Image: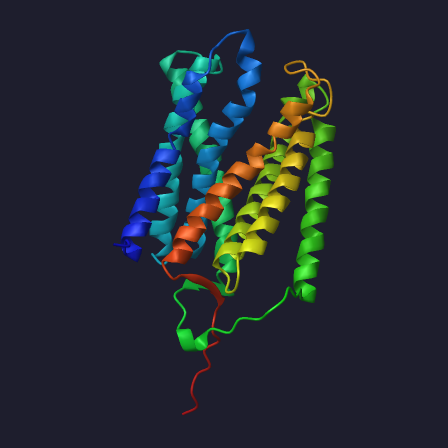
Length: 292
């Protein structure tokens, strides 16, 4: 017996709470000289909660509940995910064991997650001024065949490419040495770079899975774009150069693309569950007041 739409959404929420604890799997990684070989696994499991947070950001921007409750829900989920990140970090000797240091690290991590979810969520709120997530009526569905791009879409595409390339260049320029890498300017540029990439991936994932029409080709295109943006992240991290931690390893460069692909895949699967409930991302109808 198939699950009802409400049950599917509830199961989806429960699964995302489980995915939020994925960083605990890092505790299974041996802490010896072979740790570098497990870096791809670490990147993968640490990237999974980001997909859950991006899914929460989509709900914050396009959900049906009142916006204050959506914002509060997104913030609480970020604080929940931050718990598991702080729990696995001491095993990597990243955070000192003093309680005050753990608390500060937790608040900093939660604040960064909240900034990501709220910024992406507010961006989806802007998109929500023209599009809405609802179950369309059968007699109002019109599917256009073929792939067509308007002038506005082409402008947005070229602007996104220009922004990504500019931030990539700025990230590499500001992170040339340890002094600049720890500077405030480098952190701001890096956060902006990651925000743009995560927003592009999540926006494309939502559009590909929830718009009307066939989705297989669109989903494949989204995954290819996320792979290309993953390469941009690897370049921004400087993994194409000799690293004091990893050396010059092409397989680490390739596996670093998981940082972009894995969250995008989580969003795609989540939106497919939402699509199975009948929801579609459709253009808002213009309501014209009737003449009296």
